[in-house]
Amino acid sequence: MSVLQAVFVTTSCDFVSFFARIRKATFLETLFQNAAFITGQSMEHHGLLTDADQDKSLMAFYRLVGSAYFKKHHSAFQHTSPAQLFISLAGKDSSHTQHTHFLDLIRDTIWAKVPFEDEMPPSLGALFFKVALGKVIVGVESLESGRQTNWLSRMSVTLGGRLTLDC
Image (tube, rainbow, N blue to C red; front, side, top):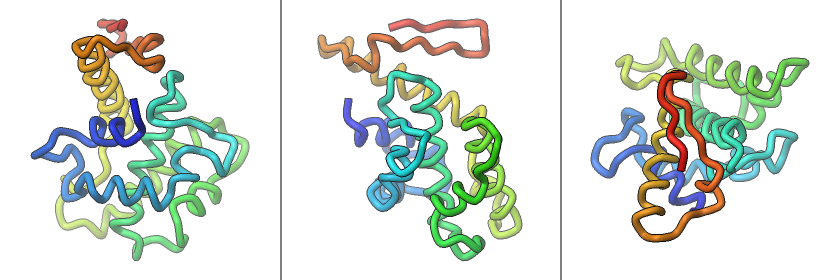
């Protein structure tokens, strides 16, 4: 599976965006403009949306979503790029905590700027389930077409601790 396919699937269906007022084209532009940051090439947190490691793919998705909202509301931030904002949060925290702070700061910064609550970035839980659903969708498509990608061969998504889907 390609990164472009992962962006297409995780940013929602063709007609209704999971991310209010942010189009798929915006996500693709954001990915191309901030590729080194989103893929983690420019830092110690490597990971692609297609990574078999669930944490790495989730954190790459956090960086993509955070970058898209940063781009849309760039005038609200003192930093010139989402990567610069992310780096400013570096410390002794774990990688996951730094990503959580990154999205929380974006959410808090644009809270007073957006006219409607649906323009706020989704919660961390919603983003987790969006990535999990994207992996399931791609898994079903791969199995239907008779091919199974390396990404899917090790996929195990736990939903709420009650249901486990293995492909």
